[in-house]
Image (cartoon, rainbow, N blue to C red; front, side, top):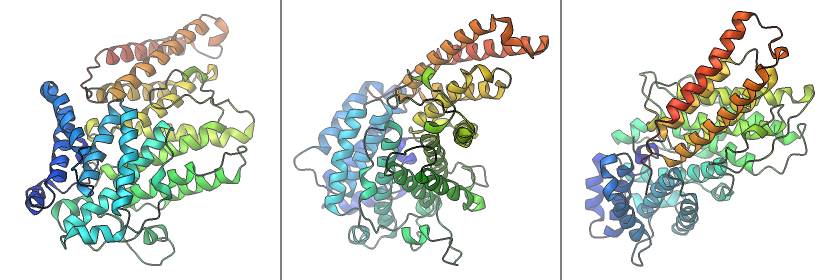
Length: 448
């Protein structure tokens, strides 16, 4: 699924001819820039388009920065598509430059205001909805880039906005746009006494806002810091108060709900970022996994005080691996899933490296296998996934080598029956064999 479907901002395909007709005399450069961006992004998913991929990219980039290009919502949409695809192609510096530029444009044109969609929507509900989605998707992408790479600071989190919330995807695609609800209504939903139904996109925004609140929290002085409990309360309340039909990333008909997928993904990733620093999991064995974010030393804690943080970290990493098991194409997900799976892998591998995990790590090894398989599959399009997969594989191989050395000591097997010992060795051997086989099949078609 191309990025424009993972980032649902531009008008539905059926409405594009109408949009082009409406803007043919007023804003042809910007609508053409958006279409050029869609063509380039689409080429990333088509190996046969590799020969023209660079030309397509140069065309859209030149259009974006041409002197006569109109700064409007269509330009923001085009730049947003480029940011996501460049980030997935390990062009993080270019993506950050574009992100800074598009944020400036968005604020200058008033995209963050309710009035923008009214003035520029021309009374057409689907166009008004497109502009609302453009602002909120830019907000989410800004947050995801800040969260997974830990270089930028989620600038848009601090920008006051009164943009109403987007509707459900099926309503948008059909053109049956209901009256939009507000962010205030979403954040006070449990106290209003009214039975309102909010869209999956709205819960995605709420998850992104929790990430922003975490990033704005002053440095924690320790595991008892009241701000740790405050952010955890936000994460837990988000999960507890989800409607029944939003507690899974799959709809009742089995179709993927990508907005809820990303919402759950952000919730679990934020939980790891919050709790890992206070957990009992020593991450030093995974310090070479830095393709998504610089390594940050997480010293293993001790004592009962840290057990809750360890459990939160492990549970969140396991839930991320569980997201892989949905019976939908992995490439239908946002490429940011790559870095979230990598974050989960760091937790899994850190646990696997611990001596005391030897007796009960079968499920853990299967989660590692899941993560590596997912990264390998995503690497068919995204170079970021290929790099992460290689780093995860290398760390897994090193942990395996160390475990083999430990297993040569007879004391390692105290408490094991002969059958359990043979089974443990066989499982270790099989997972490394699978990781090496899967990783050897990487065939990256990332942007050139």
